[in-house]
Length: 353
Image (cartoon, rainbow, N blue to C red):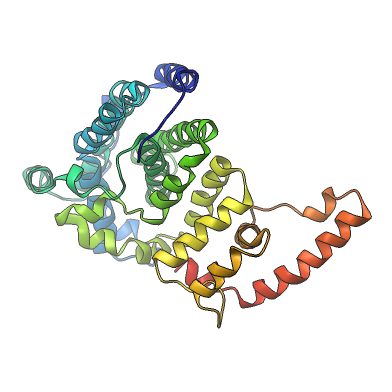
């Protein structure tokens, strides 16, 4: 995958990154010192569906995943060098890395406060670094568009995960405040990666396929880290136990993706591609290959799927309110009949499983 960005677009990307650099804000030693509050795991899970062991596992996953920041950075830097994207290396080296390097210690402190031995945690971190070759196992290609898309999804998921974790601690506790600060940084990174993706796509619409491919093949880094791989594989089942909903996480990812794509047709293409790659049937009784073949002949076929997906998760406005002619209204009513039929057959739970 080769990008062919114009010099003007590179300038826009470089200026965007320069505007972000002053926003760098790392976790302070004061934040870290405020976290040792004598919490007991049994009290944290008292009113929760999650077990003590499972809650500890969520913090181990956070700590170990955050401990490999340098390896993730190496992957981004290689992509930046290979494609001469100085704006990307500037963002990673001068903003993302120094920001992210402070994100492991708060989760380490949580585990220490809950009774873990520091030397044991240090050994786990050492093992994770020595046993992982992240560049080799990274789940997308390393073109700038693929990397910024990947970053957008990864940071969105991490932001959501930390939001669930901080809720286990009292409102005014130092631990909650420290995790909340990290969560805020992940939210900012999500927007930054999203904007960088959007700028690239606006300049070169042919990058759409790479965006779609990256999202449909996405895997969190934890899937490639042996000592927490088993926890990562259980993360979807842990989310409801942490009083969260997987559909809410999906909604957030799609919301950011919608901002990048700005087109229901493209959202529909994303989900048909996902359904095909994951062997998930979109519509009852109709094989995916037949359905996708029909889309090549039916005008706005992917757009209908896109609208249905967005409506299902509350991200699509009432189109009828914006129509201003009888022709448009009748066209809308006919389309609505078709959409209602597809909607009745739509395997929404299968898609988001």
